[in-house]
Length: 154
Ligand code: DQA
Image 1 (tube, rainbow, N blue to C red):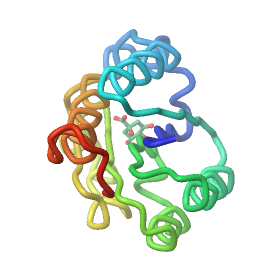
Image 2 (image 1 turned 180 degrees about the vertical axis):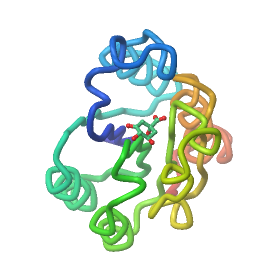
Image 3 (image 1 turned 30 degrees about the vertical axis):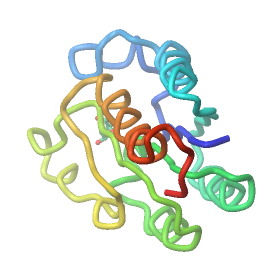
């Protein structure tokens, strides 16, 4: 797969979870739309969601070996807590975009720090679920458009 989309804890409840913060779109709807967006540009997209930190670390390790070229991740609360996730990104050295649906800088103080952001190719927050698609646009730009339609290494 060219692009791996990872969603962390509680994001499986999108659609019903605090809709005033996260909207009403469900995770399966987001994932299907991202797969279609990638496919339209000739990119294959795999999706993964887990509520468990170690499972996300394991999936990232697999990504190093399975041909993944770019990762889009909404780490959920692990952004603010997980040194293990940071170390996993450093270990696999895959380019990634960090996405948050809500504007984490307009919320509680503890949401303003992310262990991942300085390692990310870019960070999107506050655009609602459009943030995932803006991230995919950038991945398409990097992997397809920049090369005049040729597939290029990230
Ligand atoms: C979130 C923001 C995090 O602070 C929170 O813990 C989440 C969702 C977002 O998408 O806005 O679970 O990552």
